[in-house]
Amino acid sequence: MASLRLLLLLSLVAFINAKLGRQSESAIDELERYIQEKKAEINQRYRLHYHVSAPVGWINDPNGFSVYKGEYHLFYQFYPYDTVWGPMHWGHVVSPDLVNWQWLRTALLPEEEYCFSGSAVVDNDTLVLMYTAHIEDEDEEGFDQTQYLAFSDDGERFTKYEGNPVIPRPENGSPHFRDPKTWKHGDYWYTVIGARTIDDRGTVLLYRSPDLFDWEFLTDLGESDGTMGFMWECPDFFELAGKYVLLLSPEGVEPPPGGLYRSHITGYIIGSFNYTTYEFIPEVEFQELDYGHDFYAAQTTDRDGKRYVVGWFNMWGVDHPENVDGWAGALTLIRELQLYGNRLLMKPVDDQVTLRQGSINVTLQTNYGVSFDATGEMIVEGDLDQDIVLELTGNAGGQQVWLRWNSVTKIVSVDRGNGDVRQVDWTPIGSTSWRIFLDASTLELFCGEGEVVFSSRVYPDGGWLVFNRSVQPLQVTAFLLSRSIPV
Ligand code: FRU
Image 1: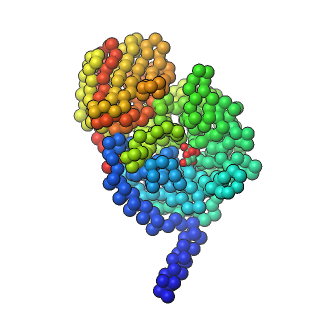
Image 2: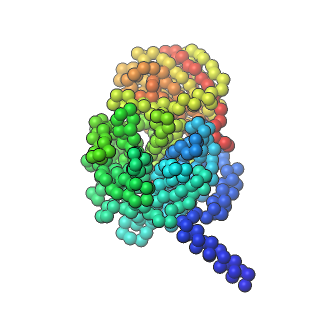
Image 3: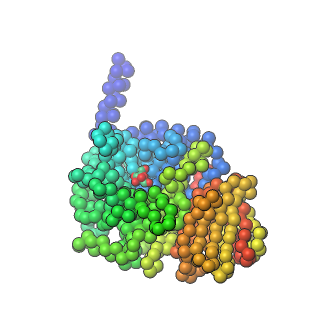
């Protein structure tokens, strides 16, 4: 009898929760206990010291990058129970300065829906998440994607809106309809959603709402002509120095003649836009944002007139060697975006320098090297009229990578060996130095003022060794970096 009463009580609680669209806090508590237990089992060898990764398990896209009650919030696509992609949760970190991050409790649990990518906005004092509900079903297409809301008044515990979805998929549209990025302009909320036309071309759809609940479709901001891919994921749209930037992650872009096909790329189109006609007029064609091996699904936020971007520091369809260690995936350093002529520059945020520990300043002769523990930062200056070659590896072996400047072709490259090379031309606009960030399994190379950036995962064993393999000596300033993410 007592157990029947308990059962009735439990189902009443479940009923009330469902009505309010409230996620079960006890299910999240249980997940957090699981995370704490599993965290202790992680092999630390490739674990990152100052890049966000999941406490355990898998992460992909950054989501919900926002400023709430004075702090930066950043969420990510999260699957805690394995080190491969699975039913999506939203993991959550918070920071006072975009450099030091703390994990908070998991923000969204999948229920009838997987919680796919999306964004966060602040409405009065409420942090509102807008995300894609991916629902697997039995029909011919196999799934449906619509847009959901969830709210929090403390920045940590989220209640899903009971009236979800707020944006159903367009009539007669493809089920690929995801990754809303939402912002406010004047009296209205706007959102851009990544989509696919019925004839398999990527597109970005623009919607408007007076209150975040009722949305009207306005227009598409752009569409692939067929060469620009079959699906445009994770769009973002913002004003920067008087221009508008459409950031997107297309799948299936045709490679340039003789170039390498890559299934997933992140880049941007610069143009003009006005809120009366809703017409986005591209002025500069699609350009890649980061030329490294591992950068995707970037998202921005802004504060005090500055625009910050973060990307997923991995790639689809490749190995993630850390996944035998209990985790997989990371986010890049946060970068400030600036518009310079026809391009975007990316620079690590100013406060990134607060992690610097001791420094050394050396003239590194040919075949001499510097060594680091798991982390380091280097400023490298050479004569660009001659070639530059840096070889990086682990002091106990492991993966090698070469950074090269070809003074004849004016190409910078990041070469992980066996033909696994990324490269692009570089014309310095000011500084001619390289700024290199090394974490236990990441490399970020910022050239000059950030006109060319590479983000690549690299897996050295032990700490890093960096050799000058150029014919010329190089001026190197090197810093050890302290940890800014808890173990
Ligand atoms: C991009 C993406 C998004 C989707 C999410 C699912 O990497 O495919 O379009 O919302 O990942 O995890």
